[in-house]
Image (cartoon, rainbow, N blue to C red; front, side, top):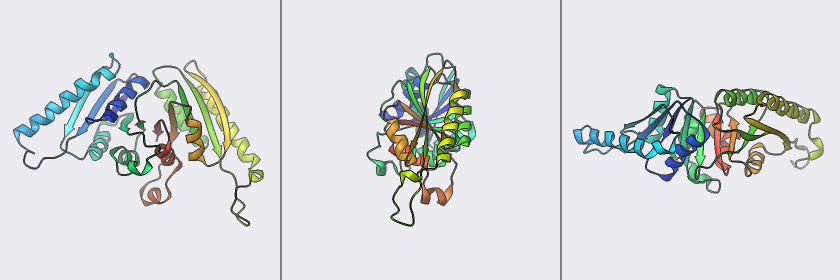
Length: 275
């Protein structure tokens, strides 16, 4: 498994690296560090040496946070915007996963907008791990599925990129209730489609059967409500939320948002977004 970790000198970046080490046994980890450009130094021998020194320091600082048996650990540093450099490096290296850290922003959503992690989340084309707050051992994982397509994508990722240790998994599907548009636009629980509920129950059951192995202890749940809100509520008792992205791009994504984006912004724990 090849992983890119966006790093700088912050505690959040170190937490992202440490979380990668707690989650996986990677074959290769590349630390990507965008250095703020300094006009009077760029292109000089001194500036190039600064980049080399920064790369060495990053490896020395982050290497102990990864499994000792990791075969390849290296760093690349350039005088570039950090988010753009992470995305460009990912396009070249083609990792299985991008990992970036961010502050605990479940109560500070606005602060997330415009951050490096937010820009990577919006524009990356591969699975992205957003690490919130401090790294933690992962023993309980919430997998949120919105349908069979989501379930299949997540099942394929989880079986192809196994966690370092066995985990207890909750597979959750949230059914959106119907609204009585003609009267008061209020949710009417009685209008909840029984067919939709049966479909959701079948999806989580199928996913549970597909994941059944010594590495996963699986339970399932179907709830009624707003998907992003419900997933974040259930996720409060978990160490990691895994969700699939439908790949909405451009203006449509910014105007309408998406369930997966809402989960990343509001969740109280780290989120793995599988694309």
